[in-house]
Amino acid sequence: MSLLDVRELDVRHGLLHAVRGVSVAVEGGGTVALVGANGAGKSTLLRTIAGGHRPSHGSIFFDGVDVTRVPAHKRVGLGIGLVPEGRHLFLSLTVEENLRVAARPGYWTVERVLDAFPLLADRRRSRAVNLSGGERQATAIGRTLMANPRLLLLDEVSLGLAPVAVDDVYRSLQTVIEQGTTVLLVEQDLGRAMGIAQRVICMLEGRLVLEGTADELTRERVTEAYFGLGRVVA
Amino acid sequence: MTYVDAVIQGILLGGLYALFACGLSLMFGVMRIINLAHGDLALLGTFMVLLVTEHVGLSPFAALVIVLPGAALAGYALQYLIFNRSLRGGELSPMLATFGLSVVIGNVLLEAFSADTHSLSAGALTTASWRISSQISISALSAVIFAVAVVVLVGLQLMLSYTQLGRQMRATADDPATAELVGINSKRVYGVAAAIALATAALAGTFFGMRSSFDPTLGPSQLIFAFEAVVIGGLGSLWGTLVGGIALGVAQTVGAQAFGASWSIFCGHALFLAVLAFRSQGIFAAREATA
View: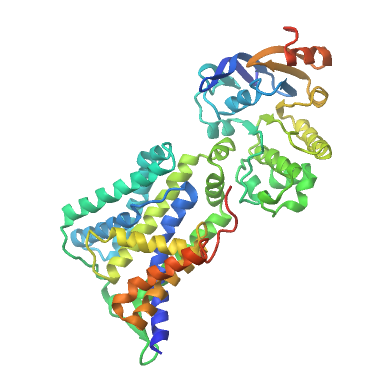
């Protein structure tokens, strides 16, 4: 049984049909990268899995349980954690408060998050509003980890960050993956996506157009699917 | 010496204003709801205490043991049944909803208790006092009310700063959608904030009823004092609300001392307008604007 099983999902924002009949399964353990151009529906798919959007059709099963109608805050308790695009930290709270407010029992504690993200160590009592982009991203990931998710959804973690900050964040992510957390990440940088993930899924205009293991897919095939140059299904 | 007395009495009165104001401040801080029914809800609490004292024969203090949990439950229910729904309708609809609620409560109280004035007896506390000098004496009731107000406001501020519920309230105030995504049940947080707001309002209303006589029409004027205390102190900080309430109380009593009793309320309003004109963020601005 898959950890996450999305079946024929349709999500609309008003007139925009952002996700069209997407079915995807994610097995427990390992890392899956979700790639695609801007507007392909990646963020909407992730937010819908986390409970931030209501699908107009289809269902989402997590660990065999139908969570399609479960509110977002309860999905966190079941083990789904989303790091939203644009971080969305609680700006008037300190780094430590941002972490503590999301805490649920498990491996990840404030100390372990601060160990995994060394750039936060001396920012513990700083208000989130005063952090740099990389520090904000690290705090956002740490905040989601505090709930000890089994499935970690990462939306555009490198967006708007300096390359050196992206390296820091990815180095820390490696620690997270080694803990056995299943990761589904949206990443614009194909090289990074294929470097960290065992499986790659490509979306185009709301549909899944390519799916395969990172080994069997070449950059060229993913790029073709990314821009819709030739419809291929692996 | 009489001015010293006026300042002392003003500080004590200000504690009550701050107690009225803290629920208003909390609901605005967490839900961004300006609760125009706050004064009437406080007065509803006063009348509930009156009802219990008259029919069960308890003292007003003992009656609070029944009325405060009732007020908290009513707050939770109001949030679920009315405020959450109105919040979905944009920023102005909660204001309209609470305005409607204010009218309804005021008229129900008028219908049920008539326009007669009532009072709550605090027993021996009403007449007991400490004589500090020939011109200054502190009434025991005022001192008790002030002490309770300080304990409630400091307690609430500590709760907001250091407990998980407090962090959840501040996080939800910052960004309710993201709060849901990190596992916070924002509806429950809103419900608890409204419960606390109504319980403190009922407590303030009861103390108000012990200090002076009251009738069903006084809700809106209590709302104005609470509102002024919040604005004078600065939005978003309960320390500020405490200081704002005290500043308002002192302005009223010192004004009465200087210009005569009929100028008391005017001087409070004048301070409020002066703060709005010259320091609109309040004496204590919130630590950081919530984005």
